[in-house]
Image (cartoon, rainbow, N blue to C red):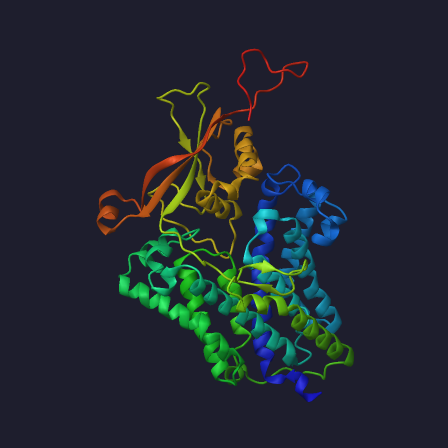
Length: 486
């Protein structure tokens, strides 16, 4: 079947595979370094408890067979090691079947992690990585020409990512239709980056141009992905430029980078590719597998496609337990005011009007007004992201914020490693509280006068002071006169 392969896309596939390996690496390292405090056996939302009340069919994965923190670490670091091997091009030196098996390893490992990640892994880019990784398994290696059907499925995925995001904006917040959303978004986005302050201070007409360009890129350009070259390459290039703009203006984990990776698979690199490596005709079994996968994806695409056309469109939804074909979208509504939960502690045993409270510092989310936001993406700071959601509504923090505070009161080392600054290095505090502040970017005059990138104003209490748990006296009873625990 001569139509089955696209010889000219060997470099497109190579660039896509190596770039995807980098995203996989970031995802596995993020998981390995953060899981103990978040979902470990003694974490805020322990995996063993999740496995007790959820059926296998709802979330299949390796941890259904066995869970321990040591095994989770093995899974995460094995995924990182395999990602490095794929980045180095090990798959190119293997037979086709072995190369496909190697690409299946990180997909299975990361699927297993997402299945037990709970709210910490409830982001659209988790499903996007899994869907992209699933398709990558069947792309083959340098010994075989790239299969046309898989290249089209990658375009279909990229289309849903961009078009879904565009539709959810137009159908959602009216500021997208009025071209005014970016007058707020750079300031109120979940995790600003080092240039976000400068993006926010751009003139309002520039913000309108930003929004209009975004609409064109997400609502018009995606259809050009299915046109002949070089038009499809130009469309993909426009998407890359737009995503790089987003990379510069904020921190969105690997969402932007993975979208860029997908766009690079569309580009026709034949003008710069040079002579392709020797490629053999694909074996019959491979053709059958690719045809079967294509049919599966098309069948599973029905519900995501219907969601795109629905007036009640939802975003970032998986329609099957393996996250094979999903629906995507981002920022259907924009916050006009930035609220931040500030967590503080004191080592004073009795609270009074003059109690001195010290603030915990987070790595990514705003805290100290003098601290310029940092760049972390594609690394994903999960606690910082959930803190942003908590400020929007306490309901987002109902399951994990209490356990988080409890671990601060215990001085839990794994939890403290997630933070930038622990104000109590010599021992845990006696009390912890949380308050909500309104944060806004300062202007040029305020920045020069105060050196502060942010101005913040107290709004309300988020959680009243909670005392450190009292150790039990012999016999299992609190000592007389002791304070109550968490």
